[in-house]
Structure formats: structure tokens, C-alpha cells
Length: 359
Image (cartoon, rainbow, N blue to C red; front, top):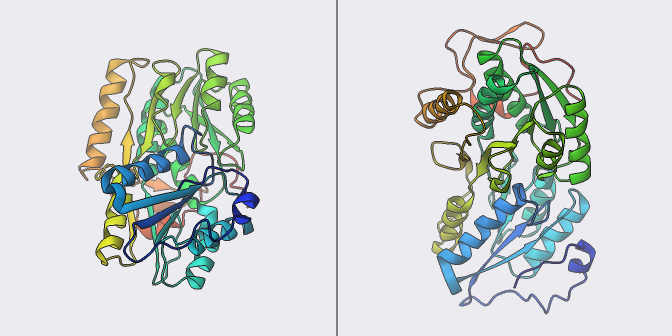
């Protein structure tokens, strides 16, 4: 059974009889709670590709269900709990703002296994998982710094949480490394998916002189705005967005959740599921770098691929000193690399970035 209705209220009004809990000898039911529509072309699309991979891997042994476009907050908790009431054995909640609703649901349903993406709270029946997106953003910054002619790179940021701040810092550091004159202009959109807001942000950045646009939002609207403006490069977010190749799209960060979803579903089937905290990157393939197109010079493409490969092989860490904080104080000494604890709670800009992080 697949829940495709976008109105959460309608889902919550469904009768429990429709989704009665699976019998002990029935298929394992795996649920997914999405913050955006499955057709967003980015974040939610890739999570749903992971769901489809679970169906393909397990066939009739597994039944998947999902709810899309669930607002973060009280609606999320109701949707999660409804899914548990309807017999889900394992539920993946796939947005940072679902963290506290997932914690609350896990407390109410101790026999259900929960997995929350990008959060930091766990329980006996609640795991967390995320990807080291900052590795991909380092590669994007490396390219952006070399292809900008205006020396202005625009960045559409979603929410001021550590994940997004890490991405901005990683992209800027690697753009500045290859182009000391580069400047980042950042617009906080306060949304994960809102094509109109994303398009407006891209247009504003272009009007401010940006000829490269990076984004931590999920629609393809910035690519469309860049294409309309002409001579503006963009990078896909979360998914390949290859329909925009070769211009103006350069490459993409691709989130590959399928192996993780298959692994965790198998653990529930086997009865071996345990609480875990996973943070994987280029090395495992959870973070992929989409095809770097011929829209950029061959030497830039080659250097970006080399950086990608060195990160994936563990030969290079994107946050390697010397790096100062925005106020000029030392963060990392020469050769020192950032520890995960600091990265997971990052709430500061690195030296060279202008502006302040919203509260």
C-alpha cells in the first residue's frame, strides 16, 4: 500500500482498519516520512529511490508505505504515529525537523524501529543516519572558485543548522583555496523545498553579480532561473538533475540512500537491528558526485575528480588546517583535521565569509 495523498489531514482521517497491522507471518512493513514531494527532483526524490530499491531487493517479503510533503512539527508526529498504528515495523523519517516528533513517536511505540535522517537524538528503538554532504560541497566549491568570472558565488541556504553551515564553509574554503578573490553571497531561504522562493533567491543572487549558484534546497528552480539569466553555472542538489546538463548544470551531489535502507530493513527482518549512528560519505558511496560536464574546462574537471578521489580514499579531509574562524581566531592548526563532534555542532563561519548566521 502506498500513501500518495499530500494532505496530512486526510491521511490521519483514514480508518485504522485500512492499514491494520501486518500479521506475524506477513511482509515486513517499512514506512517513510518525507518533507517534500517525491517528484521534487532532489532530496525527497532520492529517499524515494531508496524506498523503491528496498521493494526491488525484498519483493513480497517487504511492503513499503510513504507519506509525502509532511510539514515539520506537530503534523509530522501525527503522521509518524499513524504510520506506526497502521502496522509499520520500521519507519524512516527523512528531515532534520522530524527529529523531536520521531523521538516522541519512538517513546509511544517501543516495538517499532525508527530511523531519523540528519538528527542527533537516539533511543533504544531509534537510530540516526546522515551523509557527509560537506565532502561533496568541497568538490563543488573547488570547481566554483575556478569557473567564476565575477568572483561572486551565490549560495542558497535552507535553515541555519550545522549541516548547512558545514556545507557553506566547505564550499567556501575550497573555492578560496583556488581563487583568493572569491566572494560568497548567501541567502537564507528558510525552506527545504519551495520552487518560488528558490527561484527568487537565485534571481537575487544573479542580480548581485553571482555567475555561479550553489544550493542547499531541493528543487530545480535555481537551475531554471540560471538558465533564463544565461551564462550562470549551477550545481544539482541531492540528485543528479541531469536534465539540466551540460548547461547550466556543472555537476551534482547525489545522495544514495538505497544501500543503507536495504541494510537496515534486512536487520529488522533478521531480528538483528540495533540502535546505530551512521555518518557516511564519498568513501561508501552514500555521497556521490554526479558527472562533471564539459561545461567547464578539462583541467578543472580533472582537478575536481582528483579531489573527489582523494577524499574518498581517506587521503584528504575537507576541513584540514590551517583554518581560522570568521573572527580570525585559530580553529585548526596546520595539518590538523576537524573532529566529528565539532563538525556535527558547527555554528560558525570560517574566516573570509561575510555576514552573520541567523539565530
